[in-house]
Image (tube, rainbow, N blue to C red; front, top):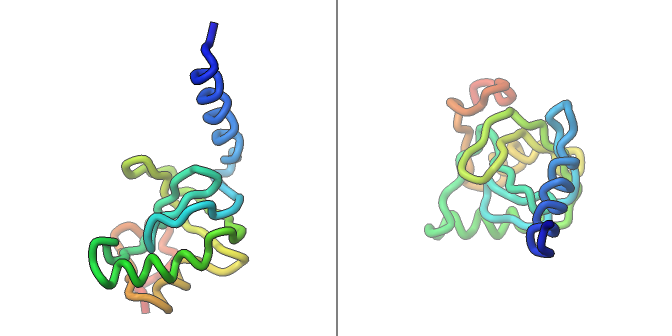
Length: 126
């Protein structure tokens, strides 16, 4: 018999798995911004594909994260690539209908990481 903590954890995992449909789409609300290229959707960490942002330990990184935090609570749809990095799924995301990667590249010091643009979404970055 499962104890309460195990049961609750199992129920959480089942719910999270149901949020990702069979067409590798994840949709929901941005519940937490970790930094410029990682946020959480309903507790599921998402690493933005092809986006290279400064780390939080730098001044630039803190500015980028501050900018990204304006999207907490926004609706998001992510097309997942099938890759994982650390605890994160990897995907291209649209926030309120706009491409999040482009938003971050156009408004912050984040850049295209061409090597990881696996769907060639951003071309040569120009």
